Structure formats: C-alpha cells, structure tokens
Length: 111
Length: 114
Image (cartoon, each protein chain N blue to C red):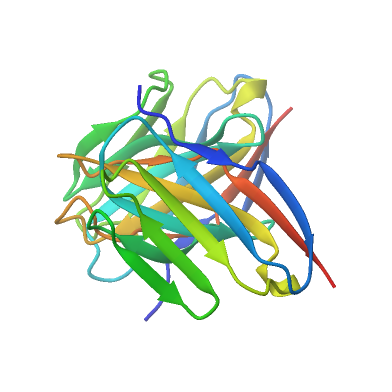
C-alpha cells in the first residue's frame, strides 16, 4: 500500500514567520500535487510538479519535488492569515490515473 | 469556465438507506474521480471513471458504486448506509489523458448517516 506521510500534522504560527511542510513516501510517484482546503470546501490545486528535483515558486510559496520523486516540500515565506487552511499533497500513482493523498497539515496563521 | 459542481451539498440519511450523489465535471474533462474525506482517515480514493468506464478502484466495499454518463457526468451510489459512511464526498475532474493531469475538485457533498 502506498502511503504519503505529511509533517507536521498541525502548525500554529505568527504572521510573518516562515514554515515548511513535508510530504514523504517510500514510493516513487509520477507527479506530486499540492492543495489547500478550507472548511466546507473542496481542495484547491496550488501546483503540480512532475520532474525530480523540480522547484516551482508561486509568490510566497515554494514547492520542491525530491530528486527520486518520492518526497516533496512546501515552503511559505512570511505567512499571512489568509494562508490558514489544510494543506494536502497528492502523489500520482505511476501507470494509473489515480492519486494517493497525504495525511494533511493543518496550518493556522495568527495575526 | 464553470467549475466542478456536486449535488446535493448536504444530505441526511438513516442507516440502511441508500444514497446517490451527482458530479458534473469541467467541460472537456473526461475523467471523474471520487474521494471520501473523514477526520480520521483523510482523503481516500474511491474510484475513477473515464469515458464511461471505471478505470481505477480503491479499497472500498461493494456497497460503493458509481457510473459515468456519455456527457462525463458521474454518479456515486452507496447502498445499505452505515454510520461510518458519514463523510464529505468529493469528486474531482481532469482531462485524464496523462497520469499527471491536474485534478479540480468540487465543493463536496456532506453526508450524515443517523
């Protein structure tokens, strides 16, 4: 069974701080997607990384796909209250059209 | 363009009943995936349909079934409901032509089983 472990599970930080969320597995994935979900809504796609070692930046968010395509990280610089939410990573299972979701990281940014 | 829509948004049923949930994907998307989200288990994959065929299946009992119509709209059915089926059911649509196509989620259907 393929698993994606996210750490930390919970994070509460002050506005302006930096943070990193990790997504790890022993399996290789075809791609890695990151989502943010707010209460009562579906997850919203933030980014897709496909190539091992790939780094993508989206304003204050930096996403990295591990060289071996087994892990990924999400770094947020100068967090804002609007970044509050549940962050989910999802790995594409090679040769299928199926995604395995990580356990989630619940982030709260205090003003 | 319009996003993924799911109906109904909220549903309350009792044990033993059955329920049908509906998902309309983004125009042009042929793949629809269904997920169950609970606080304890997180987001778990149910199944994926592409061009009216079930292409992938997760590890859920046979009480969970689905189908996809020629216009790519999909329905999910749960029979003989159990208390543990209470969850947020999410559908996601994608082009479905590569294994890294981006998924776009609907707002979900919140099912409560009493």
